[in-house]
Length: 385
Image (cartoon, rainbow, N blue to C red):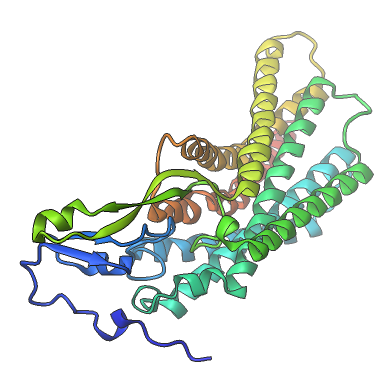
């Protein structure tokens, strides 16, 4: 089926020579994007919450460049960690458990790199036809966007769950270094398998919901349904005062009397489940910090306890990047759904491209740097002996 061209794609300069135009009454919100700056543009119907005046798929050159950098960085960095973990020969069970958790965290972050590169490649493919040919709806419902959204949810949720598991394991290790309740190699495999299974189910459920009800669970242009927008409700018809004032002609427009939450599943998942997980993470590392302060000068502290605290400090870097990437989105989501603030679709896309995936790109480098530093310190200690 051949899609008919958009009027804007045929006449992109329809307002040339009309700089003195005072009022415009439009059915297509894109008309208002290209209208003269002085003209008051009135829409017959409210624009879709995801509508944007971006002339290209990704909003600007820095975004286009940054998404390639983050995507390639996530793939290369996490590939290195995955290979390193698979080839590493670890003898102690505690180290094996950490290796299993880090390996799977790297795999989940690797998937985020794939998601970013899908968007980067589609930006080249779609280019400015996104605006001029009105391909936004076509893109959001495409199988490629659905697949990208699936990968993003699978990656982000697996990462969140693994970070929570790592934090709890560190608390138990620091407070009870000889406890039998700590993760063993076998139980670590079971927990990791269950984590991937749960994240996979959530990803499939999100994709099915979007297929069954695209209006309520419709994906954004970046294919992730974060709860950062609200949809219009209580539509009513009123007289357009701007048109009446400018040209003395009575025209009616439809406005939204209120707004309501959308993407209920994403509200539960991203604002409910993820907020709970990162609350657990925050409490866990507060406990570790207090414990370190209390026991720092404690005489006769066992070497194993000191080693666990060092491991906790090292893992806190990985946990911290995830925490500070997700918490701004969670806080903004709560504010948006409480109808306190309103985010534009451009800000929405910026958050998904710049904030959400950055931890997936820098985690492997942080871990590699800290791991290398730890090994140098051990070698120095052995040399002194």
